[in-house]
Amino acid sequence: MNEEQIRAKLIELRNLASENGDGSFGHLDRALKDIDSILASKNLSDEYRQIEYLVGPTTNLQDLSFDCGWGDKFLVLAEEIEQLLK
Image 1 (cartoon, rainbow, N blue to C red):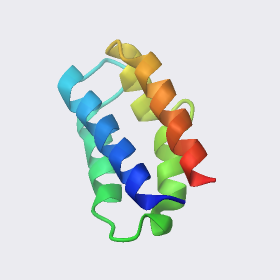
Image 2 (cartoon, helix red, strand yellow):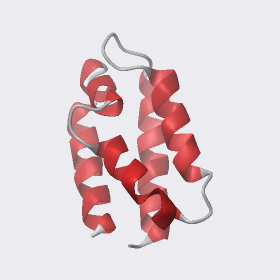
Image 3 (spheres, rainbow, N blue to C red):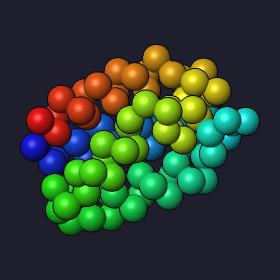
């Protein structure tokens, strides 16, 4: 796991979420809280399961991304993060 690259991707994901507002099906505040909680960790390997959950299908963040029009970008970032976790 390359923590530096994962951290950069999570920051990119956070920026996308914060720039594109709240949705009807996903909740921006919760998404930002989840991402910030992971980013606050000194050791991302301790957050492996939380990261997987964050970018998984049918999660709050995925719902938010599709609802706010950046779903394709989310899918690309989620795939990149999942590959980095291997």
